Length: 197
Image 1 (cartoon, rainbow, N blue to C red):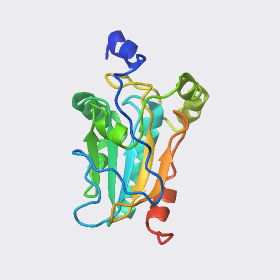
Image 2: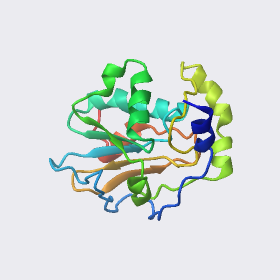
Image 3: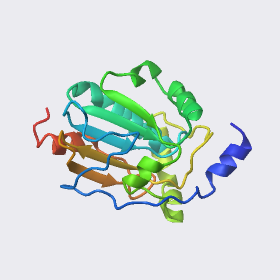
Image 4: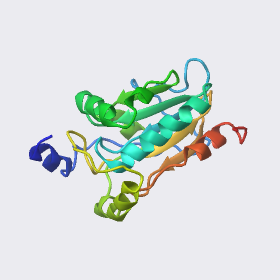
């Protein structure tokens, strides 16, 4: 990490054409990096993360990683817009990195932000980012701190979606602020029609 990479993370990223965020009942987008519906017909939870190094991205990923083993008949996809090398280093720095590899969990790197754009996730406002600063202190109580930002943009929005085996969105949650944390149990319940344990 250098001061230059931290500096560039505050710059607005290149503009991409952003689609509408898919709502409940709509067909989920399928992109070269995220194939929806899954070939095996199983439902999928997709989590588009903020940049690697962001404490809210870390908390979101750890929560996703925690719920995945309880639902072996679902797919869980975490999407990073930091580059591959930065994403790999970030994952290795997390607590218990061996848990990052699970049979039903996939980590996709989308540095060009094409999948983000296809799912309606563009750049955020000034307050979307800076309004989240008080939330950082709450995460510190959980042992999560701000880590180095090697690549990615602080202005990229995040979002979380649940899709059934036919590719229909059952849970659509575009984060309203950088500190807006998803409830993956809610997402699983929506996808499974309230049948989760």
